[in-house]
Length: 374
Ligand SMILES: NC(=O)C1=CN([C@@H]2O[C@H](COP(=O)(O)OP(=O)(O)OC[C@H]3O[C@@H](n4cnc5c(N)ncnc54)[C@H](O)[C@@H]3O)[C@@H](O)[C@H]2O)C=CC1
Image (cartoon, rainbow, N blue to C red; front, side, top):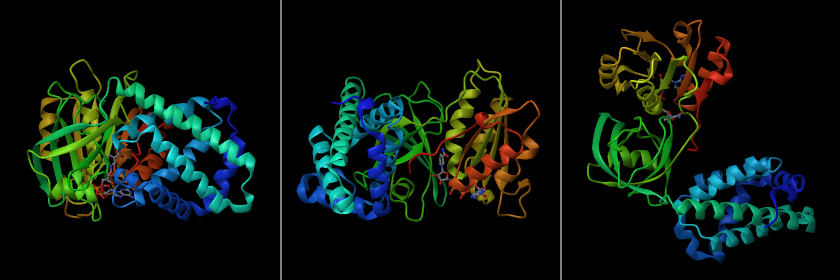
């Protein structure tokens, strides 16, 4: 295996730039070729490949963009390698992928494809997969590829919202604010990320707040077709939106819809007895009926005087409380001493909230949010 430093970032970037205009077509070609040459590999992938194609291209873009920084490159591929354990990928599969990728480049880059490109790509791919395989092997010494979780509670809180409580078959380590990928029996091999909505506790239980999306395979299965006693598969915990334990500033959490999940977990952690930080949890929903966790949040606030819960409703002019977009009402909650702010919800809500907070003078490094790969 060649060292990361000896790889040729400029050539790899050139290849990426040449293939990018054909992103969708070339990835379809790649998978078509891969499955034609290795029919057994098809069984490792989900029935619908659209999300898979997107993830593949995003990974390629991150790989080619991180080659200038060996640590970033190695870190990204090690995570990818560990995460791929849940797909049942083996070293031979990577070789097959490498061959299909070269065939794809030759087919799309055509006469611009050079021997230098072929050599640079081959070296980069060999190094990248060696890093992935090594990380997966080391990880296998102490961590399962996935966890089996039994649903021990399933509460339908609104027509399309459920709160699930799951007991993993063995401890699943995570930090408040992180997410895991989940697979439901109804959709084999389809993994979707869901935030864990409670801080780690002695009982090891995990809670998930799920809204069934109109075309959401897994979310629909979790809300409408899952019951107590069912088993789910759970991937490892990931995500960087965790509590900044160095900070003693008070905390402002801004939640949109089921984005409440990770923020509730963070709030629970911050409210542990050793802490002193005040927590304000601003919870946005479109209608009062969609404030699906309000009674539980109010009960939490009764037990913890350091917690304040503020519901905000955007689509009901009759609502007897704060009305408006949750992103737009924050001026009144931002005191001069400054908070650490955590934001989760629909992508548009998160970006609008972050912009508004910066306009209110909150420094970027105090605003925490995550964008799980959905
Ligand atoms: N770490 C994270 O950021 C997490 C994100 N999520 C995501 O949160 C989302 C929750 O969806 P729903 O419950 O359907 O939310 P929703 O569509 O019902 O919206 C919730 C709240 O956000 C506001 N909102 C929606 N779009 C907005 C925009 N563009 N600008 C400002 N405010 C906006 C609404 O007015 C409402 O108050 C899902 O997309 C889920 O994937 C879920 C868990 C964690």
